[in-house]
Image (cartoon, rainbow, N blue to C red; front, side):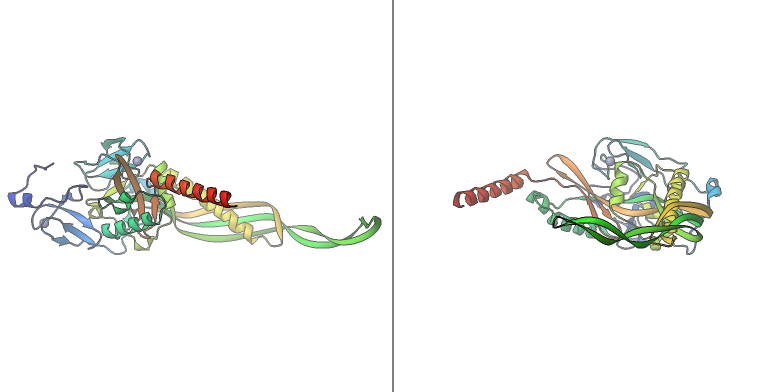
Length: 375
Ligand SMILES: [Zn+2]
Ligand SMILES: [Zn+2]
């Protein structure tokens, strides 16, 4: 399919590779006017037509963490013209630039997708970790993962065409101070000799054993803890579970948000808003403080732990963290695996080869039959 837009003749000569559209007309190249995209390998905006690159200006120390009550002042939208592909299978809402060419969900490969307006009122991310691992590295990781799996079709292991897309996943992060006061009954073990009658060789004898007792006494204490960048994943549904399986992210590489980083890639819209995100974060902090206070109770054992925690100086920010989705078609079905944008960990499913499985079962049966016949 050729795109007939406002382009000069020389631009038409070098169309980008077919497959996923990975350039943004909202960031035109200064040299030739074609759409540029964020290039993870060059850490810059790059033009696929003429090869020009443009640095994305990083303003240092610009990352703002806001008090909870200032949610209303936060900037809105992603600063780009976007559509959202809503998946009816896994629930993901992935934003990408129009014209939308995606007919399947980048998370689960399902084709049950609807194109909708992007939520312009969504809070703009304060910062993100730019996509840094390139497409080639992602494909290498995927092939390595595939080679380690058993009973997969050979054609799949030899496959060369994948659609790799970078996705920015939404998170809330919270900072706060937690002051906890606790009371509990602290138990200390002690041992007492207990003399009991026991039967030894048919004769009744008195025997003394040491038995454990607990001496209880009340205890109390307090502690203060600082929480820094507690992450709360802001998506819902089955796609959220997959992302959780990818494991934690390192936020030391956060840079202030710029729409340029999204050029040509996808961003997931959050479905857990700030209030619900903080509710989840608050619960996690309270549970954590309960655990920490429990560890402070002296003695060998404890009961009746009561903890009162007050949180203050709560600050939040909205961040985007990078993953890759790699989808491939195999015998008429689309499969998608997710790859952590920092660690390269792979999560997902691959088709089984029933021929290989049946062959393995038959081999086991033959060995068993031989063993029985000879034994
Ligand atoms: Zn160019
Ligand atoms: Zn999906």
